[in-house]
Every structure is written in structure tokens, then in C-alpha cells.
Image (cartoon, rainbow, N blue to C red):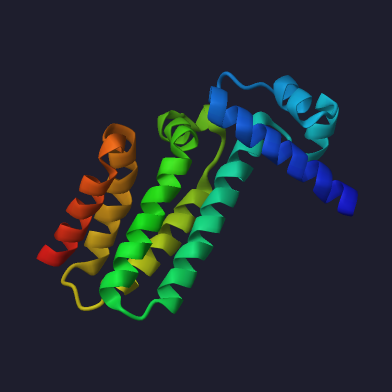
Length: 175
């Protein structure tokens, strides 16, 4: 079992590196195998396709971020600080994953397979953000707006992180 986990981690690390560097379309399983120093067939023992491997990486990254958001939500008592920390963490997730998220955003379902889990992770983040907006009118709508606008800010205004965050904080304050 330990060997299986070790090989899987090598595959994931190699794929993550190459997907970030080259994108989904320009990365092939042969390159991933070479980077992981394993045979191509070994990858197929773990993942049925490149899309399945890509989905796993996205899903793992979302899960880690969701866990971070839950910890922040449960450990920071001051509402303003909690909200700002949640938003900054969520923003930074998209900064780090920008290339992967651009690929996901621009992909068709035929190209990248099914991303049903993404909807569930989106719902989990929505619940965490809505909870942090306690007492705000239209908290769910505001949470949805924030979840939608952060990836767009990272894609289109990435050099203006602080201004983007301040905009979101002011938006919350206006509600």
C-alpha cells in the first residue's frame, strides 16, 4: 500500500508541475511519465485518462482549500478578520491555481471530462462564506457573487490583488 501511495504521489506531482507549466492540451501522459520517472502504463493503472488525472488534481486542490476555509471559519472569532482571511485565502487559491483554473474555465466537458465534484466544492465554499456574512442582507447572493468574481479578478486583473480584495471588502461593507 505504501508503494502505491508513493507512485500515486509521484504521478500527481509530475502532472501538477506539467499542467501548470504547459496547460492541459500541451501535456501528454508520456511527458508525465517521464517527469515521474515511471512507465506510461503505470499511470493508466492509477488513472483511466489524462482528464481523470487532471480532475484529481483540481479536486485535491479544492479539498485542501475548503479545509483551510473551514479552519479559518472555526478559529477566527472576530467577524471582520474572519471574512477578510477567508476571502484572501480563497483569492490566493485562485492565484496559485491560475493556470489550472484557466484550463478548467476554458474547457469543454468533452475535453476535460466531468467536474461534478466542483459543484459540491463550490457549495461548501458558499456555505462557509454565507456563514461569515451573518446578519448581512442577501448573504447567499453576496457569497455567490464573491465566488464568481474572484476567479475573474485573478484571470483579468491579477496585478491588482490588493485593489481587488479591497473592492470585495467594500462590497461586503455596503450590504
